[in-house]
Length: 343
Image 1 (tube, rainbow, N blue to C red):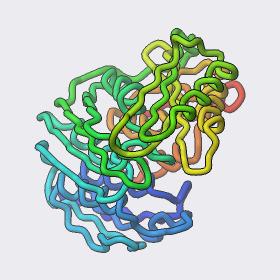
Image 2: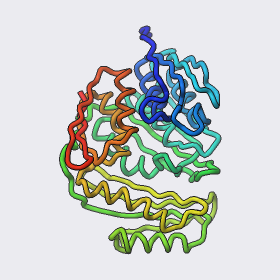
Image 3: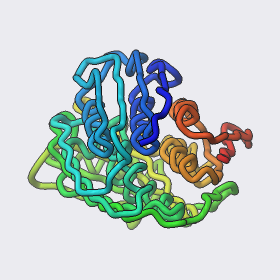
Image 4: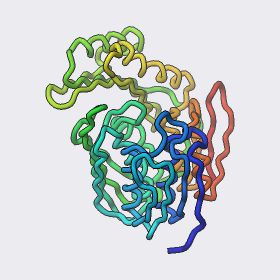
């Protein structure tokens, strides 16, 4: 394996959270580039590695036999040295908490989806977590766009896992990379379909009824456009999500129920960002943009217009440039919208 220079990272850069570490892990495993990071999650209330982040480290290390120093819960520093090129295969990782399975998958997917052989990944932990992409986002919004770019994966929800108990499970089947095409989502795209879904598990029915009333009265949705899924057994949780189809894109917006939070607020948490995004007319919303940047850089081509580029996105670009010789060009559009191009 070619010896590469050590990349050094300040974990407080940009958004200063777990995204800095996850992007570094993905690109280190993919390119064979070692890195050292200090002040991990330095801008968070509880800095350092939590169990979810440690699982990301362990997962990335498993793909490339990396040597890791500092890999323990609470650690603020980490040294990650890949041992060999990443290997396709069958992997399983258990977060052992309600930490997000989606974020662990976010770490290994760019690596495995870039290989010439298929892989499968089983992940146990949280599946519907506040502050992380829920599984429906992966299935409806993220993975279909990746497929156009030549990165192919399919996620199946095997068991629900809500915060704070976790215990959910997803599986991901990853196909070999294909040539695909450069992503080109620069123009406005009309909304052709809108739907909403309410997921209620182990909670009173009136919660879903109140959420439905808000979706009808304030979201402009019809009765036939709202689905309600009730889990009579298993974990306790509540989620509302909205989808808006725009050409090849499906934007998804989520509200998460929590103890003490009114059902009406849960529904409005999904409606507010949906309204902002749809007013822009562009197909890519800010959370999807965060996820797409790494794949644009791996291909070293493509562009998309996003309704708003958040701090996670700009931080992601900063970390990507430490590992890959790419250039991101940002062109302001109307309002907060931005055209992002990668070469």
